[in-house]
Amino acid sequence: MKKLSLVIMSIILTFTLSACGSNSSDSSSGSSSNSSKEIVFWNPFTGPDGKNMQKMVDEYNKTNPEYKVKNISLKEGDMYKKIQTVVYSGKNVPDLMIVHAERIKQYVDNDMLTSYDDYLSDFPEIKEENYMPEAWKIGDIDGSRYSLPLDIHSFVMYYNKDLVNKYAPGALDDNIVTFDEIKAAGEKAQKDKITTLGVTWVKPNFLSLYAQNDGKLTENGTDPTINNDQAKAAFQTWIDLYKSRITNKDGEDPAQLFLQKKLIFYPEGIWMNNNLKDAKFEYGLTNAPQLTDDKSQMINWSSSHQFVMFKSKDRSDEKAKGVVEFIDWIRDNSLEWAKAGQNPASLKILEDPEYKKMAQSFLLKDPEEQASLKIFDYKYNGYVSEELDAKGLDIIFGKIPLDKGLADIQKTLEDKIAKDSSNE
Image: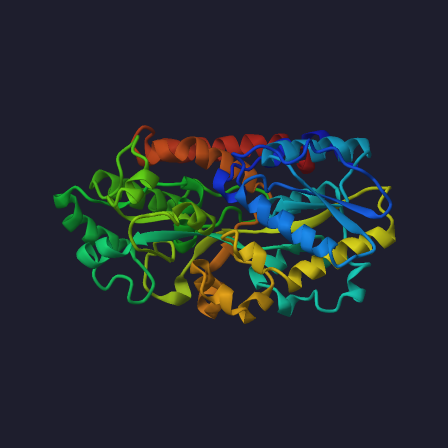
């Protein structure tokens, strides 16, 4: 078995805190019971969305299942470090855990996950056609099913309706805002000291545009490919917008600018909607900025929370079936998760009138929108995240020259991957 002690170091991801509410305190110390009739469930939902998950667990337990679920929410970073320790020791491994989609390939390569293959025959509705395709396919590796999706969460763009009407009339008619439309709005808006576009989380902003430029993070599944013309074009677009004073300045908080009605377009995750509900103006959600208004070319960066079972000698087959029974119940009862600002992966949610009124639902209701949701499942996505988060803003704001920044990112990625235990 490969060296588990290096696994998590190889895939650290920096997620926007709001995505999993990681700025709140833990709801549990993380200690777990191996009660024979209890499913110990770890997840990173320690913020407002944790209340939604706890409510779902409580509702499930009220159905009086043979195996009740014990919900344990841990801070994301702590959870990923803790799972490394318990799997390595073989003690107190949770029966079920939520992980981000980008981590699954590496966990499988390091022989850490139990396949669902032996348990799904008793749950015929857990199948591809009942789930959002992009979220479903992540769990299929080498013909075996290693994860089942809870949701697909995407990075989109909020907009101030009044400011759009004033500075970008008609831009939202097709629900796509192009970079050309943003530039045109910026030329008008800066005269009134209104910022047009927020420079927010670099990783999803860059990756969405990188993919629109036909960029790939790897050609062979292992070696990174980020110092190229497609990456230069993606960063240069943001650099030019900054130099033209269309974006916020370095040091300005785009979230505050948006709430102060001084920002037209605010790229952020669908999960941020709960944080904006007290805004004193009308706002909407649309797709991330696009190069073209051709819907077939649209790309919206996405990720997915996935249910996995880490290998454990203490989990019986009967308990594993109890785990899948809980996941099947979630598939059938996911409205509460949508109330957390998420898009459930179960397509049954599209039958719910209440969900259809939710702002984020536009991404699932339209098949073309569904097709735009892209999960970057490169095995070493964690390293890419680290480097983009560490250097991306400095590249956009001119503190690091573009060519040097991309060369440094490429070299660092190559060095980290060369040292990774799963590459031995």
